[in-house]
Image 1 (cartoon, rainbow, N blue to C red):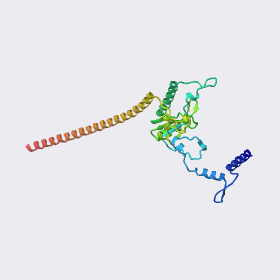
Image 2 (image 1 turned 135 degrees about the horizontal axis):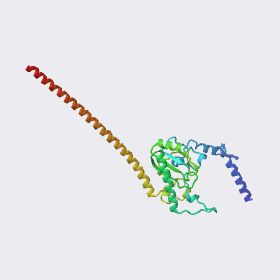
Image 3 (image 1 turned 180 degrees about the vertical axis):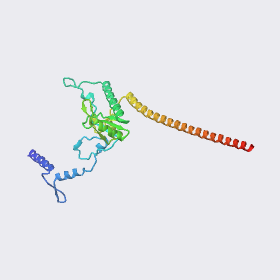
Image 4 (image 1 turned 135 degrees about the vertical axis):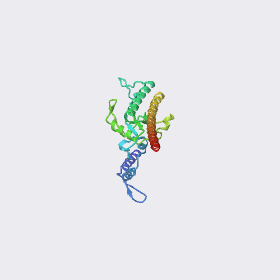
Length: 277
């Protein structure tokens, strides 16, 4: 009998949650739980999704009840699911995961990072920062964030990348609202204390080797130094050109004054001769 009562109670609660059974409030008004749920859902309709604003991706995707405001202009480009970690995708013929050493994985990642960084910087413009997610969630796995120095370069990169392929797959690129990666990163992961591992909703950024970082950023400094040298050489040539022009003007002025002096002395000499005779 007790089992039968508990079963009926569960059935009644299930119907009550669906809104089939109406409950009476303290004021005597009769409201259904379905109406309450609709009212609660309608309260999120003008609210922006904080995860999308911080990370540029949301685990709910298009089903999120909050608004994903995609930017029309930004310095940051998001390339979705571009990087494939060999430790996650490597399988042998019998279906079991094959072991990939840490050295091989780091070498593979460094080659991927250098290829994407150099290609995008040479084609579209100067890159301030590039990050790759090491998360396992569908909305963050393999995401590549490239922050350009100028918004025009980012817009040009999105238009061109969406017509290109990488590793046999079409590239899906879009502008991202992320500009400060310190807010988007998981601080517990940086300290080695994240308990959610790869399924964390914040970014787990995969680091590159020190040698590659030094090489890429020294390349960046060389480019900026070369531009400054070209600017200096142009300014020096302009200064030398202006100096030569001023010298030519001085020479012309001196020659004109010399001619005037000579003509004046000749006139005086003629007047003296005429006075004698």
